[in-house]
Image (cartoon, rainbow, N blue to C red):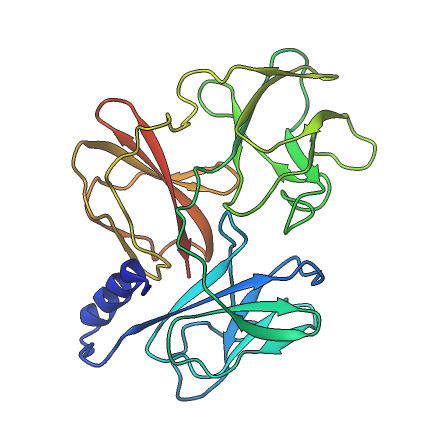
Length: 303
């Protein structure tokens, strides 16, 4: 199935540049890693001079897996020469691509496979915690044993996080990434203060912590967790280079752009078209709050 959302966004961008889109069509390439391939990252690169330079210079664009482990990228027109790589010395040239296609990459090579049915991305996993006694000079979260990135929040001591207005710390896990064993720490590194949450995090979780322990608690109001069965009807297009477009803004009270570390970056006006050109390349979430207080997260990629 063609990636309709991505096509609309890219055609919109070309129209704003005064370019013709009469002969353009979208080609979506999806890839999955076999169990014997020990890659922590996947990049896509387009090496032909006459091909659309959408993937950027080597190693190209880093892809993010969906919940089923599939990475995808949508080109305008035929992509030309495509190379999948891990930006660490390993790479595979894809066969010639002229239409939507799916590949599997194993240690022995790359091969075409039957594409799976499309499945929607799940709501992101959110980890929130509040320090109820004691004080650390800073607050960080580290996790080991995740996949496909082993250290979900980076190397030790992990992500330094600041509180929101209610005193809660929060990180949002990218779609497709699992979280291993969480360690809350003071951000100092080395032998600073730390303790394990002592479990593998597979779903949204909230904790109350002291300087020596973490206790799972019921998430308080305003956690931004989507209530089951209360999805909004707003949709957005991505990947994006300058503009993301919502299919509907009906009954939306506010929109917030959030980074993967939980940082609330911006709150654009509630409009169908939003400028994201100022954002660095990476993965972000739209937090969409409806008039009835329901909150939905939607992932987009800024190229």
